[in-house]
Amino acid sequence: MDVRDLVGEAFAGMLARPVRSALTTLGTVLGITTLVITLGVAATAGNQIVGRFDELVATAITVEVPESKHTPLVAWDAIDRLTRLRGVVSAAAVAENKDSVNLSVRSNDLVDPTRVTAQTLTVLAATPGLPEAARGRMTRGRFFDTGHIERADRVAVLGEQAAKMLGVTRLDRAPAIFIGRNAYTVIGIMGDLRRERDLSAAVIVPPSVGRQFGLRDVTRVLVNTSLGAADLVAGQAPTALSPGNGDALQVIAPPSPTRARDQAQDDVDALFLILGLVSLVVGAVGIANVTLVTVMERVAEIGLRRSLGAARRHIAAQFLLESTLTGLAGGVIGASVGVVGIVAISAAKEWTPLLDVWLAVAAPVAGAVVGLLAGLYPALRAARMEPVDALR
Amino acid sequence: MPEPVIELDRVRKDFPSRPPVRALADVSLRVDPGDYVAVIGPSGSGKSTLLNVLGLLDRPTSGSYRLDGTETTELADGARTRLRGRRIGFVFQSFHLLAHRTVVENVMLAEIYGDHARKGRRERALAALERVGLGHRVGFLPDRLSGGERQRAAIARALMGEPSLLLCDEPTGNLDSRNTEAVLDLFDELREHGLTILVITHEQEVSGRAARRVRITDGVLVEEA
Ligand SMILES: Nc1ncnc2c1ncn2[C@@H]1O[C@H](COP(=O)(O)OP(=O)(O)OP(=O)(O)O)[C@@H](O)[C@H]1O
Ligand SMILES: [Mg+2]
Image (cartoon, rainbow over all chains, first blue to last red; front, side):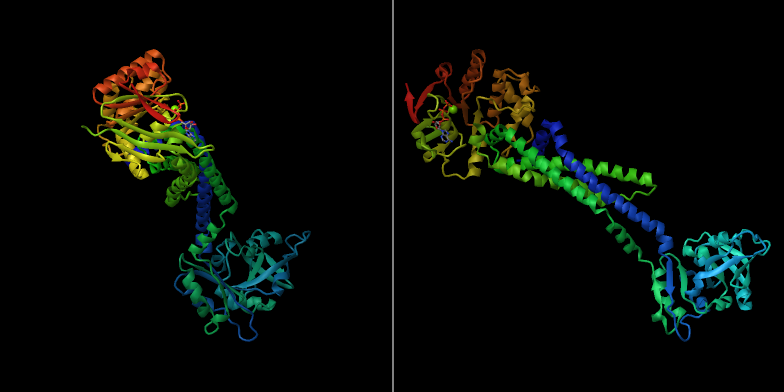
């Protein structure tokens, strides 16, 4: 028997009852659509997470410096060595300790005596590179420089939030704040932080000033690298910061991009996957059921074909192909609807849809396999039929 | 002497039911090329059983059946199927036309199994339809045809592939006398062209047109004068 004839007969058999065939595919369509949307949206969303965080997360390194009894593990000027490393875009050292996080800070009494201006704020010491290292900018004024540090000038930079809390809005009158008893001149306000956002509610002073609050040693180093350099820098940073004691430092590096993607993919909503698989099983049962009914309805046709010289395998092949084509049709429709669904969801979320070619090819194949499996039993029943009985 | 188309030698068919039924009791029959044989007998006498054995749809319990000189009782299923497709055309009482296929497609169906060339199939089908006088109905669906036309379409299908034997089980059972007449005229014509025909029938009208009559009673076959 020519394969073209077999395919022709299978198509004719399917198209003889078009409405029934269409309804039969419904379960498969539903299952494949669910699976395609679930997998497609997960991949799209995963790509989105990685994409959005790429430049930020994938290039941000934090080095935690444990407390040390004797000589500090990281000296303040070690930052210069770190900055010279290839791939380092910006870096800053920060000192913070238990006592410095709860200091009472007041703004200049003379500005507005009626206002309760004392706030409990975090006071930090930091190197001049902090605004860049925190991925922010100076919204007002300027950050202190090495000159301020060397002279141990009593200056301070406020985080945006801290400035608001203290009622400091303008710098032209050189406002002062009081930390404890001492006054400090506010020379800048730092805002729009995209990293270390809690710095927004902090008061930052030069390291030479921080000593007064017990902020002697570096406790944390913020590093930003160029894209793709994070792994390299993360490996080199400890030695650069603390030659000989690098092992004691704790480097928090971003997960490599591939891992980030995997992670996102693992977050696929398992419920939807199960739902899709269940729909597929239901679809398979539907196809099996209808094919079995079709076989029973077409007993006379089976008998006729046997009388015309059809072997059992010809009968089996025809019904198997019919159910496979039904499943394939369901798979194709399901894949199409699914892709449209992914595009629609992406459009609604303003994502770039990620359409996996593999998914678009696998979905119809999965539908065909469902149809094939569903047709096995009915096809066997049809083939087993004795021609004498079929023609009675 | 030409090789007989059918040569049955003491063919027996028992059905292992309760009680067991002997549907064919040592039937011997010889049908030569160009014979036109009518098989008559009361209901339940074994006519259809005989036709099933002759059509290789069923195996006899014992005995020998040679079709065109080939001993068939020893053949495996696949070989019997091929032989059936090649040598035998069936005509059924209920036509067995596929309702969703046109007349010509139904006729072409006879050639899709076995090793016929796809090329020229439609032409052969059209020729077969022309032969049974249905050249003007080739694109019709079966439910648009009269009973007689349907049976002629089924006969055209049976004639595809040029069988050596046409087996008909009550071919006029569903037809009125006018349509019966047309089908019988067609049989006469086919026989004149050398086709071997075996017809099972109840009807006097049909058996009367056949050159030979055999009667089955309770599985026993007797030649009628
Ligand atoms: N599969 C079977 N199992 C048991 N008995 C059977 C079977 N097939 C046929 N018979 C019996 O064999 C006998 C012959 O049956 P067959 O169908 O050949 O009769 P028939 O001559 O064709 O009758 P009718 O004219 O009514 O069609 C009947 O008694 C029938 O009951
Ligand atoms: Mg009968």
